Image 1 (spheres, rainbow, N blue to C red):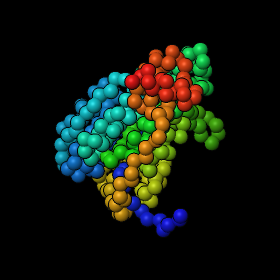
Image 2 (image 1 turned 90 degrees about the vertical axis):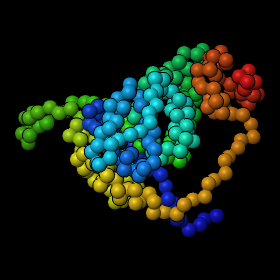
Image 3 (image 1 turned 60 degrees about the vertical axis):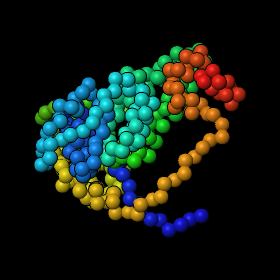
Image 4 (image 1 turned 30 degrees about the horizontal axis):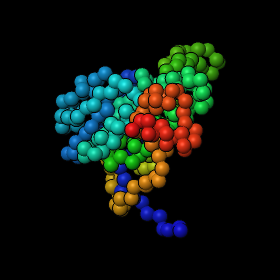
Amino acid sequence: MFRTATRQASKLRMTIDGPAGSGKTYTALRFAHALANGGKIAFIDTERGSASKYVGENPDGKPWSFDVLELTNFSPDRYTESIQAAGKMGYSVLVIDSLSHAWEGQGGALEIKDKAAESSRNNAYTAWRIVTPLHNRMVDSILQSPCHVITTMRSRMDYIQDVDESGKVTGIRKVGMAPIQRPGMEYEFDIVCDMNWSHVLTISKSRCSAIADMSVEKPGPAFIQPVIEWLSSGVIEAPKPAFVTATTSLDDLLAKYGAEKILEVSGGNLPTTQTEIDALARSLA
């Protein structure tokens, strides 16, 4: 049945994309400390400990402090485990820097797809049956997290020529292109921020009208404050009961054991019927 729509109080779902050196990590940490308001911050670091170099920075009147988890394997299910752990541990804000590794890093979605495609019964198309559920579960863990979540994504780099009215080349600029992630991934978020090498943040998508289409150089707490007010202005929604499936699914097994284990036990061939899935579940138990 239809009902009158009400705005719910919610947690931030923001992503910041841009090329290396644009200030994504620093900006994410500024926003995280403004959002935390005394709460704890968790940081998933895929950049070989680079985030910890910012501990003690004090751009806004309070030294930065946060807990870090450094990933070395970037499978989507490893991200999912880490995101869920941050929620269970009661962190106020979770920063994921960066989400791009879950797509094309070591153990990431593209590597899992390539390994699955090497199987005699799988090809590049059917291999996505393994990858897509893992990736979707990672996205769901972000969207359902009890924490505010800020992610970063690297943008591919390219060079473009600047020309004047006569067509004469006046210079060459390095620019950031599409984020490195599943196409359209950025639109899973409420707020999408694009950053450039001048450390200018531009809002390319926002469900918060107070910051829609804004461009700000080196944004800080003053920029994020309208977002905080927007997040807290709705009514608090009662928890929803968990949905329980009656039978084991391939998605369940992928979430519990991981794609590599599934391929190992199944001999590289994915089960296609419920009987085969049940048999695989017994083998894994």
